[in-house]
Image (tube, rainbow, N blue to C red; front, side, top):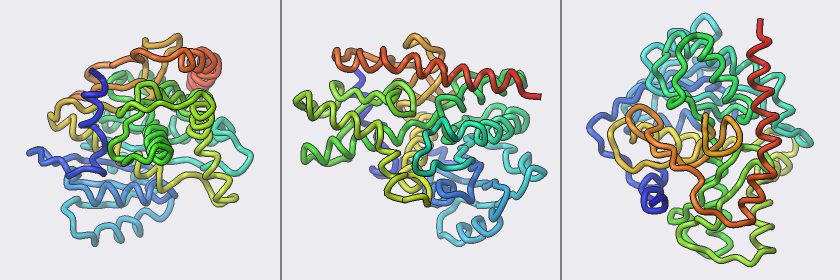
Length: 338
């Protein structure tokens, strides 16, 4: 059932745009002046699904907004600067995307970003809980394995928590898996779909190549190598950028793909499936990424892990302790917040 459903969701970026009657999504980008925020805002402005784009950051947003506002698409664009303008940026939003925070430098793990990004995500999600409690919240800020538990606990504190509306954006792992498998097998990447489950850091990233559509057969050495490459692809970019940041353009693409899928589903499109790191009962930890059937109110159905290979079973078992520790770290952070 999964592969049949998963294909149409694909990415709005790599197929003709939805022609749904309700293309009126009001989307906010928090961290819109940054390395991910700017190209993400550009992709959102380019989409007929978006009618209003509000951009927030602590610097440069008026300029980014002025620049984007000249593009000949119908989304209105407005920039908001600094904490006192954040409430106005969020009012009436249907979807909020959060790429705010600091990127990795060479030698850093995603967890090294925790101290800075945890406070940023807590502050921004608190504002969302107060000013757009019904919106879909899509968190890109790393470490996602901890920032999603933070978002959840903050929403709970404000009495606005809905587990079907808080998403950790892991789409880049799927995009990378699709690309690398397509390259290896000489396939069109737009036709490849590899579910990636677990979390969004190192060995918690678990590509289910056994569930790939179309079916691919790889000898174990190739399977091990490509799995490792998918897991460490972020580090590959960090090293190549040599201190100038981490994945921004591919992350913006993946973030836009996820938002377009979400908006398509909110507009009533059926069969939209994306993987995302969410509150879950699919594995032995409180949050876990699996394919999700999206609907008008967020998650319609968690499609679960499905049938997997022994190699994939082993990867899940090895990922759980690290996932649990990252989740706990996020939850404890909110508990200890003043």
